[in-house]
Image (cartoon, rainbow, N blue to C red; front, top):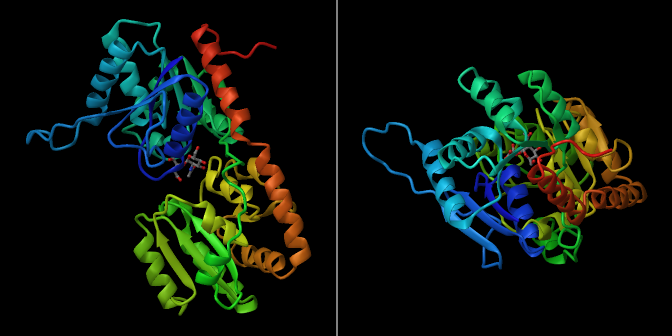
Length: 378
Ligand code: GMT
């Protein structure tokens, strides 16, 4: 198949899923054309069957706001025309699905299919804003196929947008042959020179991630268990988090690593992963941690309970329940035998989301949509 893959190229789960999917499909012999305004972060280096097309943006002075949706549509038309693509796969509905719709109208080739994968805040947050709701509903309805990354997200979409559409649940995935626990002496010595436990968190530091809760949970844990906190990523709340760590007198114990491309070495050194999000349609970073044998303490929101199992791969608490999350963390970190069982269960659970299996699901879904049938055959 010839696939036009569009995603946000920056740090964020949807871009990661799109990129890993594209790379895996290319390895299976499909041709994947990435179309975005910058090279997706996990798409470095040459790979056969992958072509990257950059959307050029005009900064004409009359345009107070960049017209990315339109520029993307034009690039999609160009790629579809010259590369003869079979389908556009849009990750994160806004504005990608709308650009694809416009492109198809311009092409006058209804046989070019549009598949939209809903990832999370496109549905739960941004799409609900009055300025986007009608366009969101329209682009879901006009897509030939729609997938959601969890059952939670499918239900939310149907309820919030009142669309009458088959939505296929295809979960996030992890390459367990890449995401596995490696020897980590170097990082352990670096982050925890006195043998402290290492607690990790990865995110884009948006309010929805509640990174300040991560720091508050850690503040409680380190009173009972010698430990350090390693924070990976960057975003709007990073300064606030650094300030909080200083206010709590934890600046020596909290390490802000900023954006990192290679997560496995850090995850391999970690003893626990915290994800106290306000909203999380799946929780890809928790899955990647689990694949590296790191148990997770998370909030109970969204699709998280579809990923991790309370009392087996980690623990789940209510949003904002800092004390309970801290108690769970202390319980696990203070009991090596229990921790080992949880670490093994986390890895085992992650293997249920093995990339080969999930990529094959996408492949089969593409084939069905190209054949004109979004519904699975019984
Ligand atoms: O909020 C983020 O972390 C980024 C966001 C995105 O769409 O880029 O992530 C969402 O998509 C991921 C991949 O499908 C999911 O694993 C995340 O749970 C989801 N984030 C939220 O729902 C907040």
